[in-house]
Amino acid sequence: MKIASLRLVSVAAILAVAAVAVTPSWAHHSFAMYEPTKTATLKGTVKTFQWTNPHVVLWILVQPEGGGAAQEWSLETTSPGVLTRAGWNRQSIKAGDRVSVTFSPLRDGSHGGGLNSVTLLDTGQTLVPNFGKEAPGLK
Image (cartoon, rainbow, N blue to C red; front, side):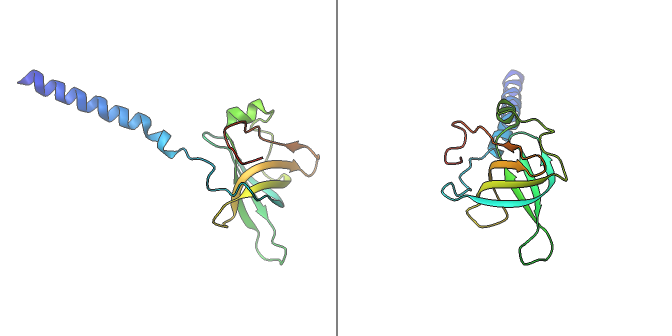
């Protein structure tokens, strides 16, 4: 009887560990929330450049044409590994950099999108993610 209980506890523990191990994969998503047939361009100032897995995120502050408070836009791109192979690094973009970005906007119209390119306005350097097959529809 004790051996059967020990086996049951062992199996339950293994299943619990396996469930915890796969949890990060549930958080990963596709680029389906972006409108791949549309492209938008914005100019702004970098607030944050977050170089983290699974996707790098660029936050920029954009001054609306009609005036008012700056709007924060969140632009997501591929992973640090893919960007590194495309020539980027964690210092490629810094807070305070003036940028022009092209992106595929969010389908729901909120302030964000899938980043297609970044041009650093002070240097003229353009950074383009190399999506390969990872994000079909984004150019």
